Image (cartoon, rainbow, N blue to C red; front, side, top):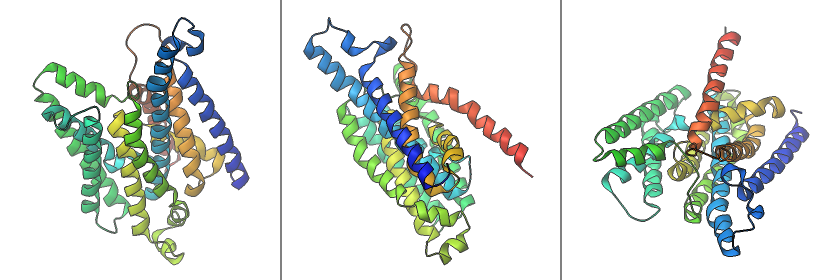
Length: 328
């Protein structure tokens, strides 16, 4: 099933799965409560729950999961590194720092203050990455620059937590950084969606160029593809898409790392064949994880980023051990 027909079949199955999970996400709540079954609710209250609480949550699940899955696949193809993921370019760390700065200094105002700060932080991290890596960066330079930006952003975020004026401010920052799509409204969807869709569209245009780059930079040039231009499109698209969703949802890790690996046995190892299925699978994974966090009847609802980390960290260790066994 590694050919074109296999890819179409996988995409069709994933699209059906995303649609089913989206419906379940919209119609179910805490403890698996099924909205139509709650006949004691008035129509007006039911509409508020459906369209102002659950629908934005489900839409953000699709957008965020799609962006993380797609960008993870593109970065793994660009860097030729199976352990690459969207946080590697510094967008997640920069968005977290931007949001923390807004929390700490009380900048801007309104419900979108934190997303605006997070998006500015992500774009600043992207600009710094490109400045450090240069116009024609190699793989190692990009990785080192991304690691340095993430480390510096993490240090500044920890400093802000350390100097927070009150424990409640620090707790608010920590809760946001755990990652969640709960308690978001349509204004958050409207803020993130345009940037995320634009970034994802830009990344999707790089499929053939990534295939050529997998054969080497010189081979890609001989086939008419510019490695520098391809790198710029992937990094800019990832910054736009991941920066937008992280600024709204907080940090949600491991989706972009795990999803491409799960799909490669089904669609093959060509980056172009992996991009769109990874977007669909990322949306499905995030929707499923968000449904999972709502199932307990008692206790606080788990943060989505905590669940993805609990599942993704062992998967990451599995990849490392597998690489050691198959390495030279």
